[in-house]
Length: 112
Image (cartoon, rainbow, N blue to C red):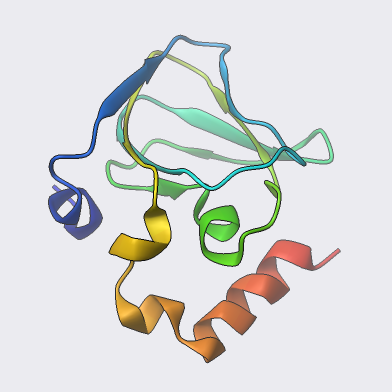
């Protein structure tokens, strides 16, 4: 189990079917999704930028940390289970919220 999943061990679980949109680019966001099982595709400007299937992978972390709309769309490719953290900023380690890390996240999120 990943360290993030251990950290949020009692977070509620949510399930999605293949084809479900988990996060919509541009939509208000803030929830952090930690993949427990399944596979998702990440799209930006309707272009696929990758697939994720590793347990413990975080999705929605940019929006959760920066308080900005979702920077990508995430679609379930197969049935998926996530741990969902509603107030993600409160459980992120302090080091992850440090100014230099947030600047790095901002640059990645808004390069274009």
